[in-house]
Amino acid sequence: MKSPFLSVKESPGERGAILVVVLVLVFAVTLALLAYLYLNNNNTLIASNLAVQNMAQEASDVGLDDASTWLNQLPTVPEILATSNSQALAPRFLLTMPTSGYLASNVNATTAPIQPPTDPQFWSQCAANNQCYQLPQPVTVGSQQFQVEYVIFPNGSPNQPLAGYEQNQSRAGSVSAYFYVAYVHVARVNGGGLGVTIQAVLRKVLAS
Image (cartoon, rainbow, N blue to C red):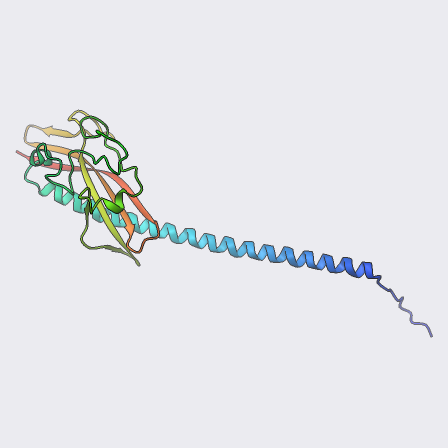
């Protein structure tokens, strides 16, 4: 008695075609899985880097506080204490911007606008070259430790504004406020290239 089911016999060509289709599907699924793993790992790395940079921003506040405290503890404005010697109050305060690291010559408080260092290697060498002040202890924020450095410059001539501020202001002849430019650099102690450099305006108040 014959079977009610029809017998279908695959040719070698059909079996080869099915094998190719299966291999293509396996390859496509593998690529999709690898892409997912890569994107997931990349997103995790980006989130981690952003977290570290946010911690570095917090650590920069410690440098700004140290710079402001030092500036306001001086008996008078630093320009008077330093007179014509740019190194008199170094490494925290410099009358003349260093030519090495800034990639510019003859740049000082009265001849050109204050500018941040343009050489990426400046902050790795400035403490040793007496061109910036480095906090003696690393600053710990969360799970990270940061090395904090800063340098302060006068804000150009008395009438030169900086972001809406003038260098000095007087009120009824009894209080004078002088403004200075500070650059604070923060980098992880263990390296990794995750650091920030901020520019800030510091105020020194003198009461007559």
